[in-house]
Image (cartoon, rainbow, N blue to C red; front, side, top):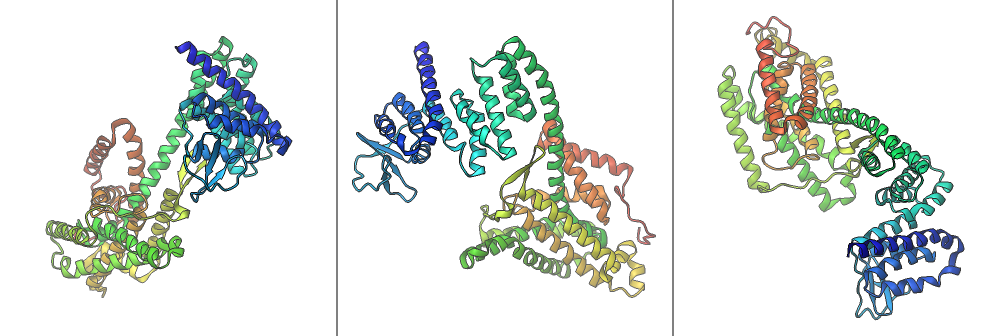
Amino acid sequence: MNGAVSFSLRSALRRLRVALAASFIGLLAGPALAGPLEDALTKLSTDKFDQTEAGIGEVVASGAPQAATIIEAMGDNRLLFKPGSVAIKTKDGKLVDAATMQPITDDFGYKPVRLNNRVRRALEAAVGATTLMSPDPAVRLSAAEAVFKSRDGGALPALDAAIAKEQNAKIKKALTEARAAVLLAKPDATDTEKVAAVETIAERGDQDSLALLNAAARDGSPIVKLAAESSIGAVARHLQVLNAIQNVWYGLSLGSVLLLAAIGLAITFGVMGVINMAHGEMVMLGAYTTFVVQEFIRAKYPALFGWSLPLALPLAFLVTAAVGVLIERGIIRFLYGRPLETLLATWGVSLILQQMVRTIFGPTNREVGAPSYMSGSFEFFGLAITYGRLWIVVFSLVVFLTLLVVMKATSFGLKMRAVTQNRRMASAMGIRTPWVDSMTFALGSGIAGIAGVALSQIDNVSPNLGQSYIIDSFMVVVFGGVGNLWGTFVAALTLGIANKFLEPLAGAVLGKIAVLVFIILFIQKRPRGLFALKGRAVEA
């Protein structure tokens, strides 16, 4: 039985190889070769897998203008048949005849062309063959990647023709790599061809390359094995370096999130000495403000959806700053000098805010969409970078630098620093410390709110959103030095990178425990953190 299946597969591949090679002759010949399309469609209407597989190759080989449309429709399960007729279901649900592309009025009796794994592999190769010469560069690049993954030997003639005509360097490189992958999988390729293919694959240097080289080292001839084994080590080392750099990037992106969540807490904790357990709920309120803004824009002005985040930023700041002022004026101002009681009071406030949000918005997660400029990803020297994370990193840096300017170059910042270093002396010099406390709490809460806008793009918007970041925020503040912005910046990035390197080794939970133990040991030696504030601090 296995012998029969193997023989059938080899026969199918031979037929497909001939068909794909003939496809480019058909493309050059134009409508003169449209006749064979009818024979191919006849095979697609038989509902037999071997006939369907052969029909795919013949559709490509026909060179008909609608060949690519037929192949695409089959891949989308939009190719229908009944005895003697094959139809394409268009995107708007209408039927057209696959041979003539004319509308069909009698759509009774049509059913989808069935696919199995062998037919799907033949279909993948056919998609690559019909799109390698597409005028759209993105389509050609995608087709090259499809052939690289399928590694079907029948695509070689199509690849050679495409490489000869390709002018785009990036696409030509992808086509060359696809050709090398095909040669490595081709049993009758010469050792010289395979050794050259090994070199090409090694230059690609990703996980797919490593898998191909391992297969070549296992199954190839002695010469090919030697070439593959010598390349495997270099690719593995390259991947290790790339993985380390990727972890650094992930750590920086996590650190930027921690910076956004902690920087407001660093201000309130440093100036006021208040342990604000409701700080995470300010982040949560900022995220829900973003949700409300997006829902309003979706309902009233859908064309402005791309502006939803820029519009949400100032609104989130104002909403959370106002809530912060209410908390400070209504509760915290009566508890200054009693940090344990502020901790308990703000913890109660956090529970009230969570329940309020559950009552208004419900307990389930809310969807906050990503504008087009925050969707997708790109590669940078082999690193996978998502636009959303990149924007958050840039945004956190902008917030940090803006806050530095406020602290260093404004009257309010000067008063805040004076109160931080010596509250009694600042009061004696005429600074209204209650006003500074209120505005400081509003500023810290407002920054937490705009952190919520950013976090809405990478985390679930739910009543429990703030709880995920409050402990990490306190660790960042204590590790960096209470009230020191540069300390918060360094601590956030350091802990972010440390977490990303520890997670693969110890797991997410043990990694966080290890970081916590490190911070406990660290503050035994440096109780004021990495960057302790300098000043006489009469109250110390």
